[in-house]
Length: 314
Ligand code: ASP
Image (cartoon, rainbow, N blue to C red):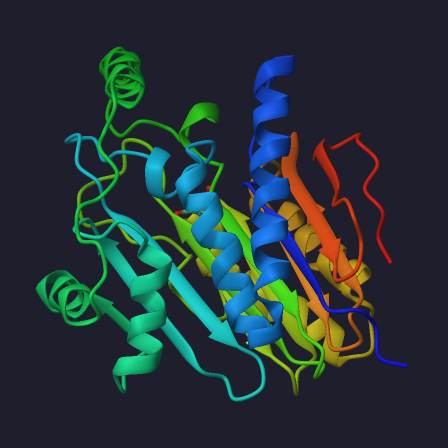
């Protein structure tokens, strides 16, 4: 018997220090809504499910994507997103886009309406219009402006290029899904990192780095954390190489994160994985990574936030 279709989501590998009970609850609600949105769409296939989950996370305002995307050091919005289908390697991504409400839908438009994989700039924004997407981004609220001001003033107290301070990374969103036909898909969306230079592109839109879905290699992965680390190590591809070599989703995820820790340090990376047998894996070397999974037919998602929190892996 085939395993149950499922959706596994994350809300970003990062330090997640001092999460107050109200914030914890808001995160839980956002993750649950995303899992439910994903499972509600799973009849259409794994890609529909992963995209629906990420659309919900983008709208939640809880994470660094869509409504709460990180800002560049100039106070502008430059979002990256991607989608990928494991059965045929169909992949679409957008980099540094601002004139779109749901970057993940624009990534899907790249997959479905063009012969390309990654688009940026004016052409990507024209595609949003062509695809009939909402081109007005979520408004930049006072909270985000205030955070930018604070980070900028902390940075001016430092010399030169700001180090990747704890608060600058994390909270990107992603989802992997496994459908009734045993196909997988991945979707990711992010504002990148706070105080990034205008024009910086992270790992999220790059297949093999920020995501990978390849049912021949063995499943789907989404990565989160410091984009520069994930790009250099090709973290999602590393996970699937371990799966292809016979490891389960969880140990493959752990191995890839261990390698990142050894090579480029702690506090850098997280991944979520579903393999072609519908087994899931999560791993991260940061203080936390909000994560939740829901299988078709189950009432409640299982979820966890910090490194020490129990999360059922099956
Ligand atoms: N990986 C994302 C980036 O570097 C950030 C994150 O995962 O929070 O753009």
